Image (cartoon, rainbow, N blue to C red; front, side):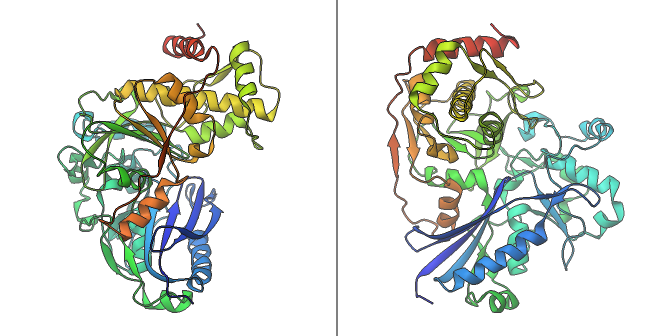
Length: 459
């Protein structure tokens, strides 16, 4: 084993689970991935936490031979919580995409805090975590009453690794109905439901909760003094490197399964519930105006199971013949929730054309969200879309008054996790400005697309 002081980031996205080993300078030493599968049997669809756990411990054994690991940092998707007693889960971890009974939605509507205090829009399925918890409390009262803690998903993994329970603001402030971002305190729902005692003490995302449990250190070969950090919501991990980048408005476009436009420095009074706008809470507890759509999932639906990166000629052909995709291709929220997606014009014929159509659609959706938010100042693209060579140039061509740049990190969540272990250390601003695309007819195509989506039908 080397003497390198490394960090393990457990990055649980909605689609994949990653375990990334990073050295003291933030360079990646190793990365392993596994699908984030959902178990469909049992009382309801739920996350396969045991499979993740066993896979993770196996990878950690491998990593222990590569470097001396000083910390483990959990980073996960939002809208997810675990109910635990002293020994483990009292109920499986509900998948937020599960459709909850319609009758429960009506009952829950009377419990929700007003949007003006939570800035958490009413969302489908279990995307409002408060609705999940209310349904579990009503449907499984005995198990719910046995719970000692409600743990946000990053803190569930931190608890399982360290034995220390904590709460943390970024997951609580992620369209949960449980938090008041502007006041930085729990919402009326928590008190109304009697859940206050179930939330452990608040800790900063970068706080070490404790050492890795001794039996786990022995099993994995990791050092006994390896620290387990509190952890953070994944989109907020992507924001960390931008929190200290000066005053003024700027926007981070965090891309993955979800595409989230986070407008730093923007007031909240322009947010509108009916457009699926929300306020997240960043790692410092400050509210951040956001808008999002399920862009990774929608890109996959349009591009198909075997995507092939398109050429500028493919993009030009689709624009010239008027082929466009109108929202939406996911049922999980977004500004056009409830509409059925459709393709107008000649259908794409090849894998490259399908990739081109998915790219055009996701650029236009991102542009729509930026405009609806009133985004001003520079825009930085983080995450999976940085691997698409056409995304940032097409977006830059639509927004000439804003500098559009790409991070060199295809996973802002990984960088954010590393930053938590090295809190306060300077991080290089490794971004590159995008050269605007010269795609002919692109502006007119956008205007036709906007006319179609705002009218709810083809223009």
